[in-house]
Amino acid sequence: MVRIGFGWLLFWAAAVWSQEVPVEEITSGKPDGSVITVLIVDGQSNHNWRETTPVLKYNLEETGLFEVDVLTAPEKGRSWQGFQPDFGQYDAVVLNYNGNPWPDEVCQDLERYVAGGGGLVIYHSANNAFPQWSEYQKMIGVGAWQGRDERWGPRLYWENGQAILDATPGKAGKNSPQRIRAISLCEPNHPIVRGFPPRFMHQADELYEQLRGPAENVTILAGAAPDGSDGRRLEPVLMTIAYHQGRVFHITYGHAGTQCRSVAFIAPFVRGVQWAALGLVTIPVPPDMPAEERPFSRPINP
Ligand code: ZN
Image 1 (tube, helix red, strand yellow):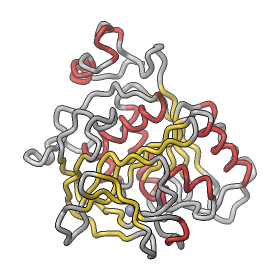
Image 2 (image 1 turned 180 degrees about the horizontal axis):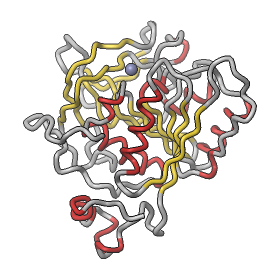
Image 3 (image 1 turned 90 degrees about the vertical axis):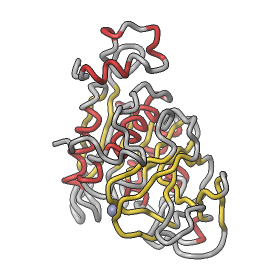
């Protein structure tokens, strides 16, 4: 499965674990030489999953390191019969789903999979899903809308160099209008964002605000300032959550296809999926990663 472009290979050579591996041998996702297997689950959402799933899949497969299957849940109102994701077959599961509750057996399967060391990726409105599923709240750390309020947990944000848990009552979820924003690193040494500019620009997108939840074992990797603020308080946009033995990567942005083709989405997404799958990151930071002074240099992918 050799589909890495020459530029990727050069940067790959600089990656941490690969420093002792000859460049021509670095053609696979895992240190043992195999590809990283990923399952994207979609099928119900208030968002256009038919548009975004192919872009998520493209972003991963374009690196040459992932093999991606897609499982589409039945439409609302249809029988769940036959919807039996085999999570354990995959190194990571990406949720592009925000719809009706799954059957209990499927929920329990996901809990077992992640708790046992599986990788889970919560993408954008997947953090709105399943408000009544208590273990899911722990997996996502924080979520929004669908009736969530202080009963789900405190607000989580970043201020003065640290994560803040704010128990002030209120609803969870506020959506600032789409516009270009700077994303600021909070944990620059985490493998997913290591090497990113301290502040980087993302194409016009929504900013999820006022996220709430159990917020246990959450690391905020990066955040963005809400509109009209003084910029000191950042809403978390990239997070990791430890759930028993499993690793969860949570990215709150990427509203539609256009936003998912932004380099500022692609870079943390593909590295976050690799981290969730393996606990390490070898995918290089793209040379055109958009810092503040060079916002958008790459033509948008097909
Ligand atoms: Zn959205």
